[in-house]
Length: 109
Image (cartoon, rainbow, N blue to C red; front, side, top):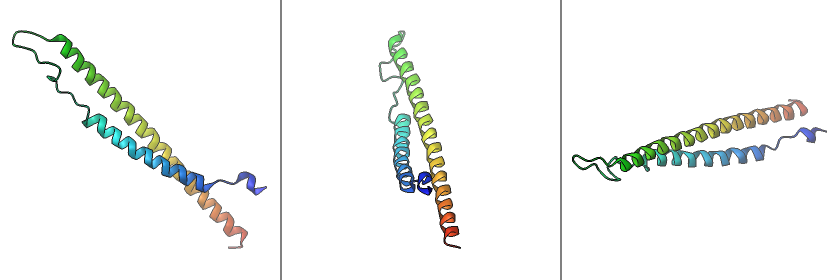
């Protein structure tokens, strides 16, 4: 009957290890979106004296908006994965402690 409620601690450990890898990758993605996707205001064309290149401004503004949105999405994913990883590690520790206590009480300790 006790096997019906058994927790596979190895599976939890594997989950934590995989989450750590995902969090590391998200950290790289966060840095990449922040620092490797920059576009200078003049990259798409500069305004000539007395003229305005409106399309270049629109593209630059669209790029800035999209960059900000991607940074927010990656940050949200990072926060969710960090929270899930923390909760999984806590659950693993709690189950491990409970298993140890149960084994100790069964052996008369």
